[in-house]
Image (cartoon, rainbow over all chains, first blue to last red):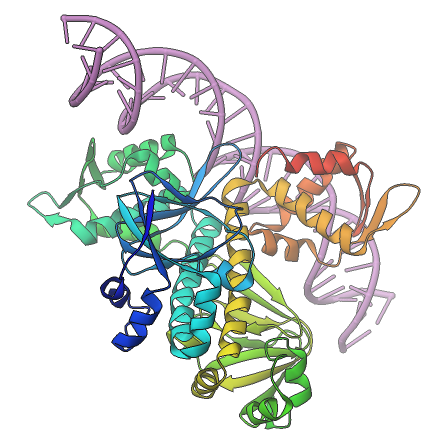
Length: 234
Length: 234
DNA sequence: CCCGCGCAGTGACTAAAGTCGCGCTGATAC
DNA sequence: GTATCAGCGCGACTTTAGTCACTGCGCGGG
């Protein structure tokens, strides 16, 4: 990881968080900003550490997750360029509630707690923007809770398959095809379970004729059958 | 439910959200505030409804929860006087992510989205206060996710029993005694499960000699045994 | 070429969670 | 008094989830 003071006006302006500010305002904030570079797999920070400031993803991708003592992982979010992370401890002063790791080489803008605080006082619209971002995060967390407490792993798996299919599936004569962009282990982490269950559930969906699985290559044979599985309970 | 325009200066000042404001400022805000009264059991609003403004609990208690199609309930939070609720849709404009019901007769201060927005622009410290409140909520949601995905119902039950015991337990010759303030059904809703499992798990803890259960009267016989159950995984 | 390693499939098993149905009890209403 | 109803206990059962141990494949480095 490396850190250096640089001009971040351009980067900050892309973040959306600050898009309504005038260039001189951005400039001012940029002088208080530190850029940090992280390699893929590098930890930005760990759950429980005291929180020193606000991070904004300028380039790359990071994964926010919790780890259990038994080694299981639960992904809370994956954030790309323009997202701020760890907004919350900045304001309530508590420790980080989760760990964050870079999943690609990433460039992170960092603003110290005090500076950002002061900045918000001068530019109330920034605070409102942050609130909107945090609002989105809250929404997604509630979604995760809903899934964990009301649905089976099978349903969660189907739901993520459908999401992936929608994003990058291609219609062919056989159905909708796509390549899984994750390993079974990674999917398991997203769903809060273990590798084997992903494997088994995929096999079961195949046995039921809804899917065809060949390594990471997946063909959805019966789209309506899959969506029907989701409507049994929500 | 009834609504009327009244002077809320006193109530608002108690909320903590606004504690740093000067009396005239509070006065100003209060003129834009509507008080609503809800009877125990009455719904403030439902998940999915469009969001019209910020609610602050002045008196009473409310429960924030999600409902599944199969009728299960998952409690997200219980809020008392001074807590704001539904802060988030106020800023991102989306619908309510959960339902809220009064569990006691309650008095709710309501501020329209536009008014509060404008107010934050004039008083940036209020926005920061709201951020702190939202931060706390985020923290608790992450805690719920952690519990749902890493722990068993048994552990979650023990953990809530210990919390209750700490709050209102009394030490006697037999151990720490207290009366469960909730029905089994309510506990199940908190933990995201069903009534029977609460019953069974209580019985099991009793069979193991850790507890003694008589209807809602509970005696903790072996405190360290209970806490040990929590440390197996977290 | 072979070794190691990450990833995936699988069988056998245990434990946890959830479902269904019924019966008991204590409070409240009529 | 008795009808009603919410809350609870409990047995029998099914389904999900999770664990353990092992196999096999493909790929890149030594």
